[in-house]
Image (cartoon, rainbow, N blue to C red):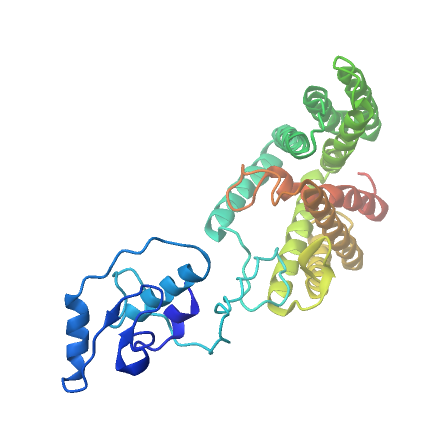
Length: 386
């Protein structure tokens, strides 16, 4: 819609020189009389048929737009049209300046925009989170092998999401079968045989990826197997440290501490960043993350770590929990940034759509995976391998 239909007065373009009304661009005239009332001009205009003028581009099209706007004397022609609201006057010959686009929803700890939003279906996210929490806690404290199975399923689904996105966005064809089988073997070996079993399993998985890819043409072989070995270390190998934590006398409580620290860190980052975030943390990677959000993550995680070490972990001391919470908050943030880097390179927002309100499994594992080896190592240092 041109300027004239927004800001021109209703009588513009109806009266020409010499007292006669004209409509520029149509070539017809409305006779006027100084003796009669003003409303007779409008009646005379209504009784005279309007000639049909073919549409033309350029100036004639703009003139037609002006006349359509000028003829609109009594409001919108259709019910679903809205009256143009008065606004600042625009220079002649220019279109009205469109309103600024709405800000793109930021991530969990969005930085100081006018109206902040998480950009997620909050109700669905809470429901899915509660459901996953019930499954994890029930399997963790009722029968530990079932929890190992839950971790193995998460690993397989995460590998499927990662390899699917690599194929779709980069045409990198990572062999999923050896990765999935090897990933399950890593988790089970870590629980049954400890760290040595996990190391053997990851070595065999990398070898299986190299051999499996040999069944296809050699084009891009190095690229595909490199991505496959990366996926083997990124998802199942890091998840194996959860199984290592479980294989101790107070294993369920160590795993619960690890989960609580990661969740509390993310919650603190969201709460503080959403409310006070102003200074971007890594604008090129994740523009929504702020330094204030990182401080919130550290503070929340340190408090949670002190409580967990004092009341949940055998022989734990509160000050050890402060260090544990600090390390967990930093590793969780780095893990989140790392996956954001991967998703930016792939040009996607989420790794999948399996979990409503959350995205995919990998979108939930991004903070957990790098935090698992950090928590496992510090617990071994503080209270032993049990």
